[in-house]
Amino acid sequence: MMKLNKKLLLLILFGAILSANGQEWNTNFEKAKIKATKNNRNIVLVFQGSDWCVPCIKLDKEIWSTEEFQNYAKDRFVMLRADFPRKKKNKLSEEQQNQNNHLAEHYNRNGFFPFVVVLDKNGKVLGETSYIRKSTPSEYIKLLESFKD
Image (cartoon, rainbow, N blue to C red):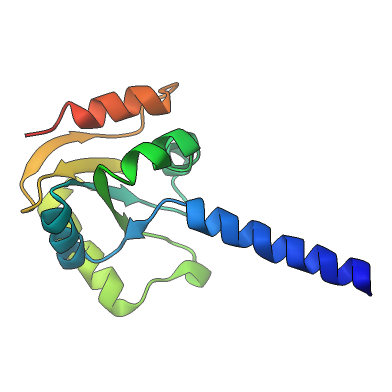
């Protein structure tokens, strides 16, 4: 019984550490703009299909989820995710889906996935990119930084 409690405690602590160090993703555009204005940061808007788009999944694994990117981005960008899952179990709320559709109409009219748009704090487009094969987090950071106004 004691071993089970220790394992459970370790599992909970490990989960807490992972969530504390994870990328902070915003899903509300207006709140992201407020945060960007308050902290004088650009917004990185990511259009993805989290449960069907292979390049989106690779971008998340190779860039967004890395410790290097997360440590850099936490003090420099406001990260905003517009997800378009297809599987029924991952369906978004109607409100969230409508918001993501509105963002896509404005910033991703061609429907590319993944599609990364760097915006200033007011929502003005500074630059666009996508998944880049064999790109390192530091190379991707340089690219995103090159879009600064």
